Length: 316
Figure 1 (cartoon, rainbow, N blue to C red):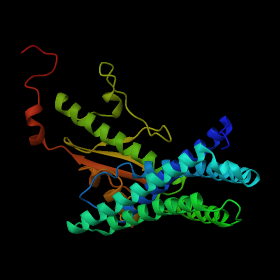
Figure 2: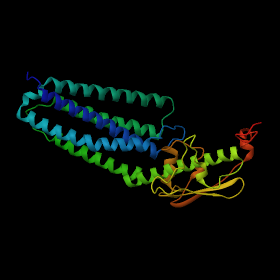
Figure 3: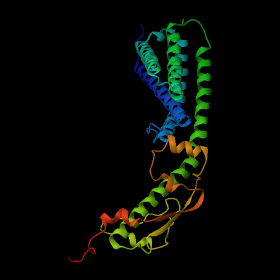
Figure 4: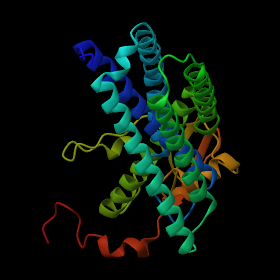
């Protein structure tokens, strides 16, 4: 039996590791597509759906070409030296892959049957089961065939499998950009998320100022506090100051410029229900594209228990 060289160990280990990363990434990516297409309001585990999509897409773009390149290289080597098909490292990794994929299929079918008997068979669950069945089944079927095939018989199955899988992966990756948007759209959306976070912080600081001073600040610079270290945030993209206007003894307005429109689109409703963690204040911060203002009125009864009994810094 041909002995494995350090190059063989490196090549086969790297090829199968990239295969595992690719399988995990495509499964995670398809799961998030299902989550965003069939949002379930009972579950709130989709806060990082876009992060998972981006990570999965990035992984596939990097590892799949590496896997294909190694597969082609090793196929050429085994074609020249058929005895290399009997390398221990190759056989161990193939049968380990068969074991993992077979175990995944068994667990997947058990889970499907368990949920069916419990009456919890939903569209999103069935689709996820199908994803696992297809992905794990394809891996299991191909490597079972590869382990059994005659090395002397020429076949186009590996080449056809590589082309077919690459086309499917390319289609899935492209679909991701339609769901989560282009990198430019993602950047614009994240700037808007930072703006909302800044405005929420400013609203909190304005209310705190009113609680302690019994009056609204004349401008945002007054909120700066060297002791607590609070500095007034600026627009993360333009570095311009946010607009603040007192409109009464208990009311004020905060304004900012936004890149995206969050109002009344199917895509944004989907994201609110299936991607971002439900925020009790989200309805108060919906915005369109361009300049948006948010009017706020303080209810004294809500904060009456927090009002100081004397002016801070004075002796009772």
